[in-house]
Each structure stands twice: as C-alpha cells, then as structure tokens.
Image (tube, rainbow, N blue to C red; front, side, top):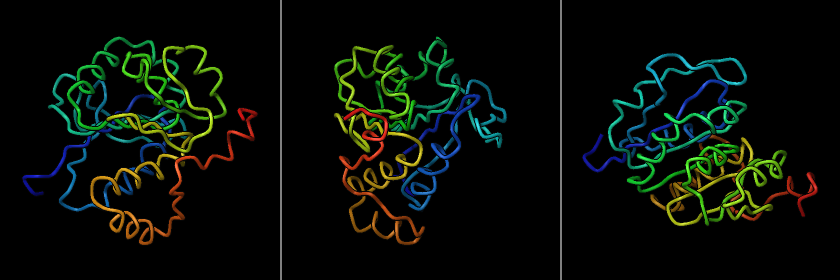
Length: 206
C-alpha cells in the first residue's frame, strides 16, 4: 500500500445483505494500492449474512481507527440495527470525520437513524421505499434513482445498485477510465446514469 491509500471501512452486522458488501468490494478491491479495506462489527467475529454465508469482522467499534471512507450495507438486519445505540454512535462518530460515506439498499435507513441524512437527498431499496420514507421523514428521499450523491454521502438503491454506485465513486476519485477498466475486467454491464431506475416504476413510485 502507498502512503496515500485511503482507508475504507465496511460495516457488518447480523443479516447484512451479502451482495451489498461483496459487490462494491469486488470493485473497490480492484484498485491495488489505492484503498486499505477492513471489515468492522460490534465484535471481532464471523458475521452471518441474510443469505447465510458469513464474513469476518477484522476490527470492532472500539478499536476502529478513523476512516476515510465508510460503506454501510442493507439487509434484514437493518431493521434491528436502526435501533441499536452502540452501532448508531459508531456511525455518527466515524461518518462525521469521513471524507465519503456510502450506503447500499436499506443501509440508508441506518444512516438516517443515526441522524446523518437529515435534510439530505438519499435513496434506498425501492421495494421498501415507502416504509423507509415513513419511518425516517427528515430525509429528502428520492424515489427514482439508481444512486444519489449529496455532499460526502452517496446512497444507492437495492442490492446490485451498490456495484453501480461503487463504480461511480471510483470514476469520481480515480477517473472514468479506471472505472471503465474495472467494469470490463469483471464483465459487468455498468449503469452509468444515476437516474436509471426501472424498479421505481415496478414498485409504483413514479
């Protein structure tokens, strides 16, 4: 790693959505020397996803150093974590100092519960969009968006949308050509338009 490598922390909690984490990390992990990636949870342990397979948390809330970037996944566990004071306090502490805070799917619900999205534009999984908007009304929720950027916060729609968001972030920080090369190398059809969102229509949001 170079001295200029940014630290990227990825939050884990029981019943996180597997692709919300592994999809973006496939993209971010394709930047050798640019990012130092670590997984974080309440305790250093294996953390089971909604789909079953577990990932290992490499550090915990108490020992996690200041991060440059933070990624918060969604998943069924967000319903519980949105009412988990230690996790919300960790997010508030880290996100305040972070250069970039990202969420996938209902990860935005947890960021909103920590008060980090108040008055900001954001989006979330379209299948549960109405419910999230109802329980977190202080956020300006955008119903039709693949991802939404508002200052240092970037929130994406459901699950696979996190991959498109990650590539958009890579394009912003490391150049569009780099993002294109990663998309091609992973044989991923990148949706570059943040307004591309057929799922909003499918769920009757537009």
